[in-house]
Image 1 (cartoon, rainbow, N blue to C red):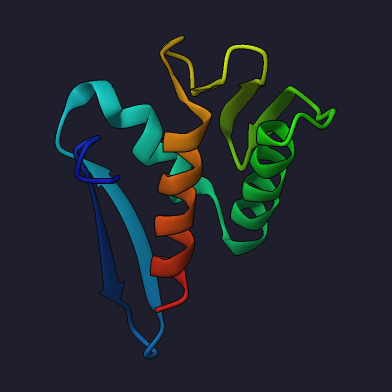
Image 2: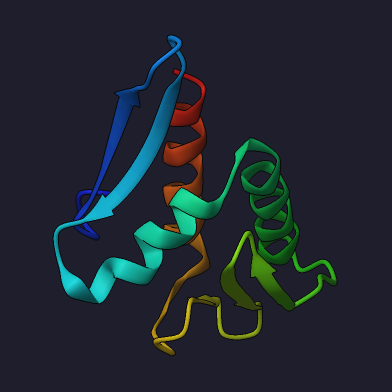
Length: 109
């Protein structure tokens, strides 16, 4: 899914042997998506996936998450879409969930 949105993942080793996981974009229009992923640690990513699962199952969820580590997230279950960041662009809940799952798998490497 990340390729569809022009997003790349990169792990960079830093001093002391630890590493930083980056999400970057190849297309300007997907900058808010990659920024949101980058801002989402494991805990926030798992929580977002759980909320999206509940939305897909027709359960009541908090639609306006506000900022997730500095990146805005709005879930619109009735429309089957999410809005990330400030560009008012929406993508499908299913696509976003897949992006989060890919990011989570990457964070676990």
